[in-house]
Amino acid sequence: MILDRYMIRHFIPVFIFASFMFVTLLCLIDLFMNLVHYLNYEAPFSEIMRASYYYIPKGFSLALPISVLFASAYTLGDLAARNELTSVISSGIPFWRLARSFMIIGILASVFAFFFEDIVVIPTFKEKNIITRRLRNQKQQEKNSDVVVKTRDGNRIYSVDYYDSNNKTLNGVSIVERDDDGSFMSQIRAPVARWSGEYWIFSNAYIYEWEDRLLRIHALPPVIDYTEEPDIFGRNSVAAADLSARDAALLVKDLKQAGLPYAEAQADYYHRFSFSAVSFIVIILSISMGGRFRKNIMLMSLLTSLIATVVFYVMEMLSMMMAKLGYIPPVIGAWFPVAFFSVLGMVLVRYAKT
Image (cartoon, rainbow, N blue to C red; front, side, top):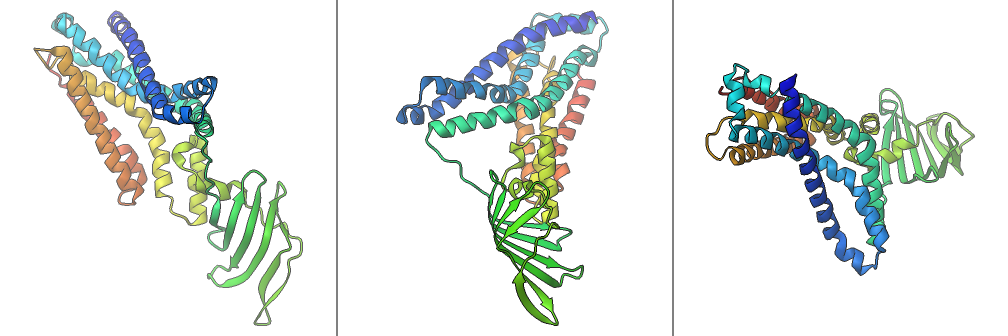
């Protein structure tokens, strides 16, 4: 316990300093990328600062893994440079025991990263984007047009010209009903359908259905059978990466029920969990490099850790791309790099030179 406290006391100040520097750098990069547009539209200084303020959580989320990497590599490199690492190992303490406190920090940082992203980053980054679009005089493009949704195992098919998410109305509605064999049963057409809170209310609707082997048309009487939730028409137009874990799971469920491609959304949903483990991965890679160099210890430890981390990010990018294209299952695309580098890091730490 004394050794763990000693390691943590060296780690925390470096981590705080690194986090502050990296978050400041990311905020400045975001500010300068938009500064020309802010000045062109004479954006108020207070609103510019407000947009930067809402970007801080996103900046910290991006900076967390690299800050953990830098702090762990610097701490171990500093201890090795001052021969403290050699003294500890010479006393009979194995290297993996020395790095135990760092591994615990990596696990806690990964758990924190998931909930921080889900609860804080997503809503604040969304607000930041709204402010930025307003200051840059940009209008958000609606993506709720030409919506096709399948429900009831594909036996009911909605075709909607446009879904108004604010008023919860469907414009240009066409609903095709099929039997279990896939044969046509009826079709409803209505210019507008409004959500009552429990079911859809159609205005000036007509129904086409078979009667005596003839396809007849007549006015649709009041019905309460169409109870599909309004969000099913709007969630299909957003990305899973922009949603909380709960909403991303609902999006995947909606896409499956609608018979639409869902591999990309499911991969992003699993990636929400696997990406949180990056802090643990980088700290494992960092401590696995500790004590392996005799000259320029601090610099070489940091450099090799960065190279290993870059390889991890490249592998993750490739596996996610293959998962979204359907070449591999989404769960494998999201978790394979994490599992591979976790095992590799553990092996390197276990058999590190003492």
